[in-house]
Image 1 (tube, rainbow, N blue to C red):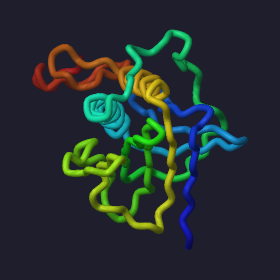
Image 2: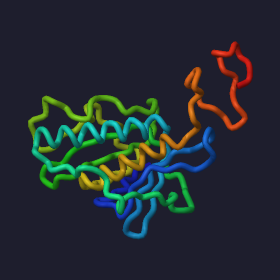
Image 3: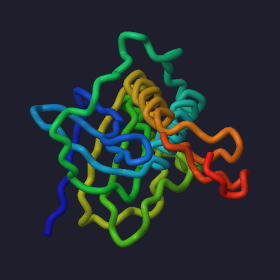
Image 4: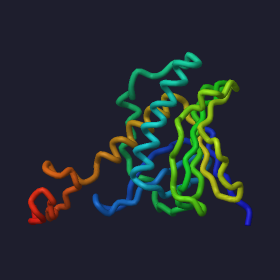
Length: 198
């Protein structure tokens, strides 16, 4: 079976979002463009790490290549809209790859379908030994027969994605002030209270 590469270079919209109630949310990356909408499922920790590694990638691109970075996210670029519906999961993400294309001054994000290996966002966002114009953190190339979602973003669009991804992750259940575990609306069994319901 051949794999599909869903490329959006650039997308009209690329966001992280969720479906479901806090505590039972499914996280998605969703790209829209050219009359297509592609949604891929991933874990909350992957969204959080993706935002963190993208921030590191932008800072390193600025340091190494002098790329101008936006100071912050403009209020007009805040995307608070829900995911486009229907949200049809194309595949579950196993690996996320990041690169900075110096020629076009764009960030390339590649979400690769989960194969036999576990979901992973490993390695640093930049390979320090790479002297090419393109900086990549993917040392072990995943199987070529896995589906992929590839997007190319400007630094401004990347900052907007990071901002929304962080807000989506933070919008979950508040932490217990004693143990730090997520609080359900009905409370939880707090280990700091010897298992009494809190």
